[in-house]
Structure formats: structure tokens, C-alpha cells
Length: 380
Image 1 (cartoon, rainbow, N blue to C red):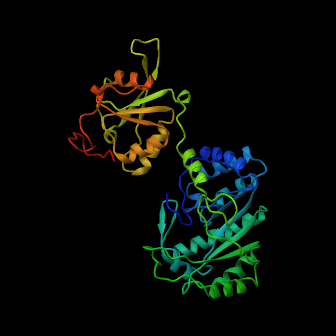
Image 2 (tube, rainbow, N blue to C red):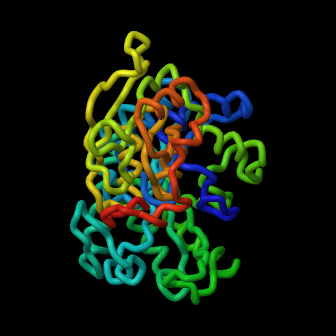
Image 3 (cartoon, rainbow, N blue to C red):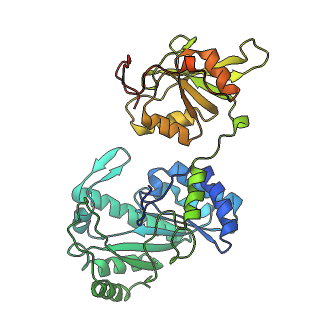
């Protein structure tokens, strides 16, 4: 995120945020006719979010062309649903049809929770890819193959890939020039020159039509191929990733407390949070609603994303202290993190009335960990 190079994005959106963003961009870019999910990463590493996005886009924009790009490892269980959603194009990245060559390209794969390496990994990946292509074609989808031309690794193997893909009924192929990245395994391999790419396409073209107009772009690209992402579009994208909190739809406030009277727990050591709602009929102006168990520790940043999901209907979280990672994650999801020490009722009164926290409730140390009396289970 926040880099200007191919394959990156300025924001990560939920499926509903993505659909809202699309609604706006369709108005700003009238010739927008295709929506694609490409990566980096693979759409079927988190298939629930991918399919939810496609469903929502199809519901709101029935005539929009839908496409996605995948390595093919985990697309199989979703092919029938892709066809039902009328996804028209699926791109598979196939860099080898010989497992011995594939083993030189792929460091590892994970099939469910099972990590695999070497020829075993490359063999399983290839089997999944070939089966996916057969089923996608049988379902009537257009299939495009991307093959990365890596000098000294698979550049002399691309024609064999094209021949194999043609036998499966693949529609078109895109031979893409390898782009070295500093710090990666292949950083010392130079990119193929123009002559090598042209010769590779010529040989592969004996078997499959070649796509030659493809250009590297950001993952959040909008518009025509030659158009860069404008500042306005990047700002629009970022705005949808951090939508304003709709307080009417977030009636609750969460509290980290040991005994239910004081805000006196660090976020990292809380096993559960107390949920309160506003209630004018009570003397305090608020009422206890329920208890929610915190996500289990040990999942790293994913724990705080899970917490944001858990508190989706809360406008704020009252806590004695929280680290920068959970604060950032929750704030980006519209959940205000209020660090304080004192009576729960006083903190709730400030939040529900949308007023500043009284100075007497401000926590008494300046950074999480300074003067910390926690258990060491980790607020960050």
C-alpha cells in the first residue's frame, strides 16, 4: 500500500466498500465496463470476500463484465458459482507445465493448512491448474493464460506451455516480461529484453493467439490502460476505505473492564468486552447490553481485524490503553478508540453526547508500555 508501482494499492476495501466505490467511479468514468479482481495475492486465498464482492457488483451492475486472475490452486470449488455469476473471463498464471521447472519458480505452496515445496508442490499446482482450465472451459468461460518470461528459468519453456494450453481450449495467452524486485529470490535475474519477449511470443503464437497490449498497472487501476491513477481517484479510494461512522447504525460502545465499573484494562489483556447502549430512561443515560469474547491472542494483526468485525455495531471502544496496531485497525473501520481511566458511566456519557473526554479521565501515562501494569500478553 501507498507505493507507486505495479501491483500495489492505496487502500484495502471490504466487499461492501468496494461496491460503494464502484458506484461512484461508474459515474465518474462512464466508459467503465469491466470489473476485475487480480491481486497481489490470490482471490481464492480469501474466497468469502472475493465471492461476496462479485455478488454485490453483479447485483448492483447487472451488465458489468466481471473477470479475475488466479494461480488456479484453489479456484476449483468456486467455478460453478463463477459461472452462475456470469464471470466472463478468468486468467490463470501458468509459468510451467513441467514440475521440475515449476519447482525452480515456486518456493512453496499451501494446500489448506498443508505447506508443500519442490517438485511435489509444483506437481499439485499444475494438476489443479489443468483441472481448473478444463472445468472453466466446460462452463463456457473465456480463459486467458499469463506466463511470466523468466530468463534462464522458463524462457525456453513458454512454447511448450502454449502448446499444452491450446490442447485444453484456452482462448488467449499473455507472455509477460519478468520484473526483478529488490530483496526477492530472483532479484539478480535481469528482465528479458525486447527481442527475447518478441521471439517468445512468436513461438507461442504458433499455438495460441497472443495478447500484446497488456501494460503493468497498479492493482487499483481505473480507466484506460495508458492512464495513470489520478490523485482524485486515489483519494476517492482511500475515502471509501475509511468511511465516516454512521452513528445511527452503531448504537453501542464497547468497554474493557475487569469488574464492570471502571475502564481499567489494556486491550491486549482483555478476554472480553462489555457492550453498552444509550438509554435515556436510566439515571446514567446508558444501559448494559451484553458481553462479547475477544478474539483469541496469537493471530497477530488478524486478531485486530477480527475484533473490528466483532465490534462492527460499536461507535467506540473505551480502554485503559491500546497499542498502535489495534488502534489503527479499529479507527480505519470507524471505531473510535478512547484511552481513559475512570468510571465507565462518565466515559460513556462523553461518547454518547459526542463531547470531549473530561481531563480527569485521561490516562496517566503517555505511551502504551510506559508504567504499564499489564500481564505482557500484548496490546500491540
